[in-house]
Image (cartoon, rainbow, N blue to C red):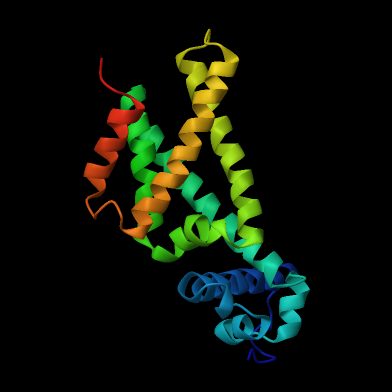
Length: 200
């Protein structure tokens, strides 16, 4: 556990910020590797070598902590996807390709990410709630993209398309992470592109 001198000279706000980050890191490692059964106040504090009082300084329970883990991983995913899409330029096909590849690549580069974002998010109530909110945000991003491309399109048709796309992406990520689609990321993205944006 942390020694009394560990935080000597560190301002109170910085101490709390650092301790919160350590707890989130520990929960990510434990849940990402062992699932819900591996996550407890004691196991998290043992993992990051903090006293349990620091846990309750930041979180009411492990559910709240797990929500913070999801939020951080989802934020990192969104950052990766945004960077990939921006780097792809203005072509709709290039941006769509970059977005799909970024989601799948991010999720499988570290299996713990995929477990938190997709695999266990179906069964764990905390993650399921967070995932639903993320789906809503992703749908809004897709609607925004399509609005720039086809500003005069029917709004209901656009929402239907965005809903189908976001739902399909979640299922695609799930199947990719489970190994059902092989291990060739480029081939999977190419197949997805033929369905999402078939060439004329």
